[in-house]
Amino acid sequence: MPDGIITSMHASAPVPDWPLVFEIAWPLLVALLLGWLLRRGLLAVTRRARLREHESLRARIVQVISIPASIALPLLFLDAAVATTPLPQRWIDGIQHAIAVALLLCLAWLGVRAVRAIQLRVIRDHPVDVADNLAARRVQTQTRVIGGVVQGAIVLVGVALALMTFPSIRQLGATLLASAGVLGLVAGIAAKPVFGNLIAGLQIALAQPIRLDDVVIVQGEWGRIEEITATYVVVRIWDERRMVVPLQWFIENPFENWTRTSAQLLGTTFLWLDYRTPLAQVREALQGICNTDERWDGRVCVAQVTDTSESTVQVRLLVSARNSGDLFDLRCAVRERMIDYLNRAHPESLPRMRMSLDRTALHDGDALPQHRALDALHAGSAQVTEQTVSPGAEDVNDADAAAGQAPSPAPPPT
Image 1 (cartoon, rainbow, N blue to C red):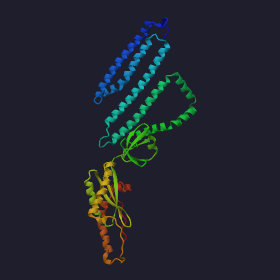
Image 2: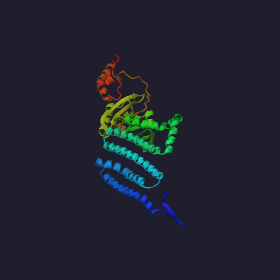
Image 3: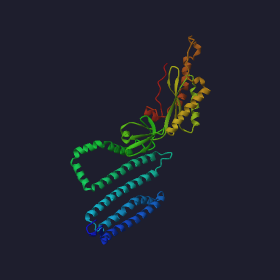
Image 4: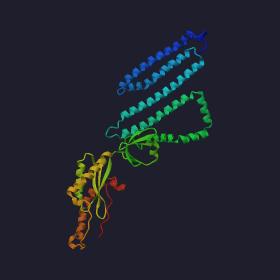
């Protein structure tokens, strides 16, 4: 108790100086009462603003400010009340120092809430649950990463300022600065992963090699970017697993991004078929399969012979879809339905092993004359070229692709 509060001593207990106790207590009680009433009012305003936050910008601003203010304003009342009391000066200094630290933390809290509110507003204005969400995913990625970095910086600065108000911490800081050579090197090595991820987060936010909901292949795993924080990325694997990858990994390592500029993709299905396969019917069947499947986006539907072996030919069925999920299902459907079609309509097209037991040479009448065979080859070349042309993704000559012309074939041997 401060000097003068206890005025006399009885045999068993001290007698307080009630006028002095009243002089100390009444400013504190008034400050606490005013702070409690103000806090109740601000919380009521916050509840009312929460009901209208989707309608009014003013309501969102009030909601951000009112909760930290409901703590900071009562502390200011208490600080003013403590200064008017006849307490010892060292007591007043200690209480005011604690209040100043609390006010600094409230200010940092307000800054974090303001950044968070801006981040939520931007995310709300750019939803990703739409068909064409490329721009929205880009904005959301930048907002989440930069918002996390800014919030972390505000917390770090607020805590540092609060600690620097203690004289012992200031002396420790001066000592550390005096020996900054060795300690800076040690701290730099220890904090390398932290600062590396921080810089990587800024690079991802600005350059955007990945965005939220991007389809990626990371270390052989197919998945979608589910979350991007200030230090790591969560990839949702197709089988519901989650892969947590440091941000710095995406800057230092190659990976596949299937939705970098567009979600549209081309996919292939390969079939090994017999040489007697009627390719015209195969192309007609493939077109019918694509036309009746809603996952086909109408861009590409091509059948091509891409390789041959001693007993079979390799036929590539090239199709397109709006996104990777539809493309995978479409490829499976094309493969299944094409096999079913060949089994029913052209069983001779399925691969088989041949063994010739008759080694008699072919008669001259078993084959077409050479000039007739060449005439038939030239007559069907234009149709085959038109039916087997790729959609442009595999062009190797940019000048020919831009002109819409293929390189001129060499003349047939005579």
